[in-house]
Image (cartoon, rainbow, N blue to C red; front, side):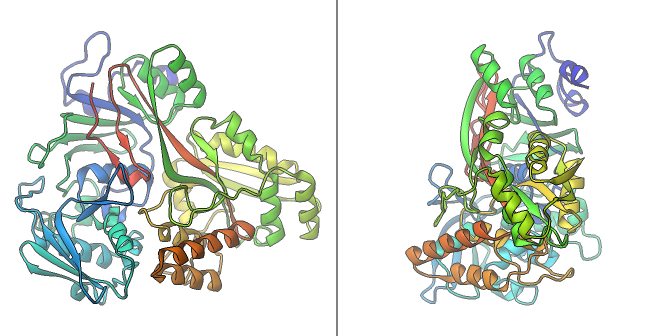
Length: 529
């Protein structure tokens, strides 16, 4: 498989779209090929997307009212909105739209499109709708709370006063993407708001438009020349290359311009040989273990504690993810309001064994662990298997493709899941509602966030998370999030291990994407070669 991949010039999709490659296998002029991992894609509809790389796709094909500034995450730039104001009541937000914007279809972008798009995400009621629900938007009220004033003006009413930065952060997130209403309604089947068609198509107004998606192979994007400031690169091709070694070979052979998932060893070797350039970007993705409390052993606080003391955080970081992750144990990444860098846990086998004995499990127990079959999850899972074995915890690894592993996790069918979590927006509530909020622990819950997936019933932490969300004072709000992190760190079915450092490798002469603090803030505006 590795040998075959190293000899491929471009995917079949790309071959069909561009002239044959020259003998030296350099990618064609005007076309930027990125070796990455596309296994998370199940749909191209932003109203149904939570995952990391799919969010990156949305960030470059759709626009929102506002976006967080890539260089200063405390600032907001207008995209579809030219300006905005907050009413004296603190709940009414009025957005004036930029004139002259168009969708990829050629249809004009209007206030009706904006209002309908926000309504659509709520009414579809997929998982991402929970992001907009943070503003108090529901199926029952969204058509009243989000409304058109005139063709260039939209009003949104929140359910209570929030810090304006929180509201703008929510509206900058992937589920707040603006759709071409006319186009989607022309493809509507029943009451699906065009989501069946949008699963494999594009209805955006962003700097790139979709040419073709071949699942687990390629996504091909074409520059949208009617964008207000067209991006330099004519075409972008994302290639699914799950193996880090195969990504390396493609980059070395000139079959890819950039690689997103090279191993630390490959990065070091290629950098030293002068064959690549490496750009490092700190991002807010957390790599963590999720323990399902439906398993009676994993539900025991002493077992959760023991497992935290069995992980060799520094050893895994040094030997497996030396350049791609740093040790981080709290649920707020660096740079967020109230973030804590506390890291009390290190490997202590004796302490872990004592805790297991206290839990009535002196001989350990058997358990399974699910993870995507991609770097670095499998390598980390194998290291954790060895770590836990020192305490008598016998772990059976169940690798699967990302879709399979994440699907099992979302259905609460895992014992232990190894995965990555990235905030939906640059506000601490995005992670707090993941790790410390579960208002309905029933299988029928409409809000199926991370705590729910672990069947972790936490009424008090849920109340504390909701109180932090509405706290008007930034200083007091930061204190609330510090307290939440301390509580989850001390007693929870989450073992947060690392924060991601993104390494983008490019061929000499090429410039890769601009990486923001979250995957939803990746821009292709800097691509060049």
